Image 1: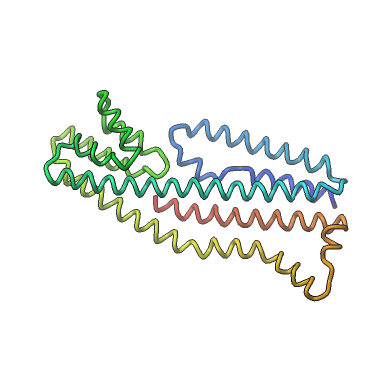
Image 2: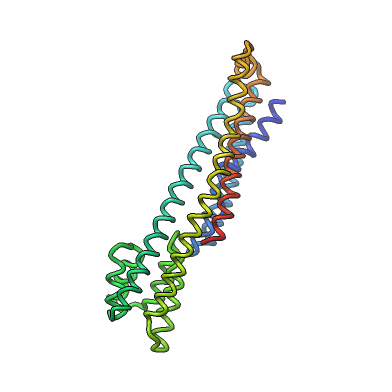
Amino acid sequence: MAWVAAGAGAVTVACLVTPPAPALRRVATSRRSLRGRRRGLVVSGAVLGLLLVLGLADSVASPFLLLGVVSSGTLGLLGWHSRRTRAARQEAERVARSCQVLAGQLRVGRIPVEALATAAEDCPSLAEVVSAQRIGADVSAALRSASRKPGAAGLASLASAWYLAERSGAPMAAAAEHVSTQLADAARLRRAVSAELAPARATGKLLAALPLVGIAMGFLMGGHPDEFLLVHPLGRWCLAMGISLACLGVLWTEVLAERVERRTR
């Protein structure tokens, strides 16, 4: 039984140490290398988890080792994903505001280069584009390059508008206004989708905590679940695998929510 639980634990550890695929796909500049690193991480995590857990399968510490690895890995992945998502949302908000400033500057008669410099004061991605423009680089190409950053995808539409205005001589103000409206609508949609997904995320975390509630109820009813879960070998593995599956359920909920949010980007 311990060997079966150990093999399942190794698979769980390998799943948990793999970064979410949608987050890796957003980095378009090095997609192939990231896929190679991801495959290497999967293989390394699986081998390391298998060696660690199977090597200690008959010891008292092995279930608690699995429990520690899975719990810390889950918390680390959730924190990493939360910081990355928050940074991408903040960048998207900055890009949307900067496009509004750009459209306003163009409406009052500023030339596109000066308007872009003014709009870039609150947006690091646009500031890089302005720096590239000052050394003679193509602005539309610089905008496309900046749009590959997480949260800055809206700059791709601005790059297309800038390219058409440069090549055809069409006024930039109308195109910038359209891009600004489009990004503002997309930002409102992202906020609405995030608000709708918040209860599902909270439910997933609540379901993961329910086993702890069951243990607490066992104590309240006069039982001693700790004697089975912490002393008996089978109980230790049940505890470790139960918490591992709960962590995997929380991560899977985040993956499903990420897939829905990705459709709004």
